[in-house]
Image (tube, rainbow, N blue to C red; front, side, top):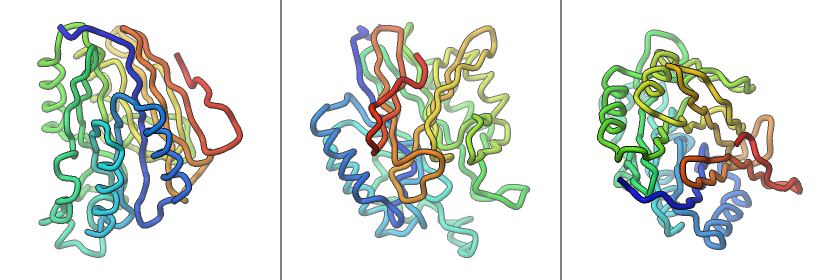
Length: 257
């Protein structure tokens, strides 16, 4: 069993290189240098249009942070509908600059971070940007949870919220509700996500346990209800709290804890 200690994670999402906010990115980088979090969890939409240049710039930025990084694939990180051949048959061709970070499990003292893919190349509905948890993706996540050290906290990293979180943006993740129950039953403590561009931390009762849905804001120009933001997650033993940090005059504040 890993020996638990105090940890600090930075949970960031939806940077959208190609529509990024340079001031927000510089602000985040400066905070990583100054505060040295134990890891950065990036829950998708690193790019805006999944171009090779956007991936290169995003990958260079993530490597420059100098801390362990795991990266989920967001709906903007696969080619758009108007490039159907590349979207369906070669969606990952441009990932070379970030390949080693994609869905990388993280094992820290007392904490295991498990990836869960929620993007889909095609779906039986018009809006392919919404989430979907496939049986294979869920089973891979559950197997990683089963292999995690006993008594570790388990954080699952996905792009889409598995159920709606009351934000302006929506995920409408297919099979997300049943996936959340299965992850809770397996011992998951939190599901970290992005996509909706606003921060939240909501406790959900499932399978006789409480699992937290934690969403990060955006460091892009595509803000919604809040300024550019990311989450700081503080872990002390088996307890953790989420603090929203915004590029504004407001101090960081606890979302839940």
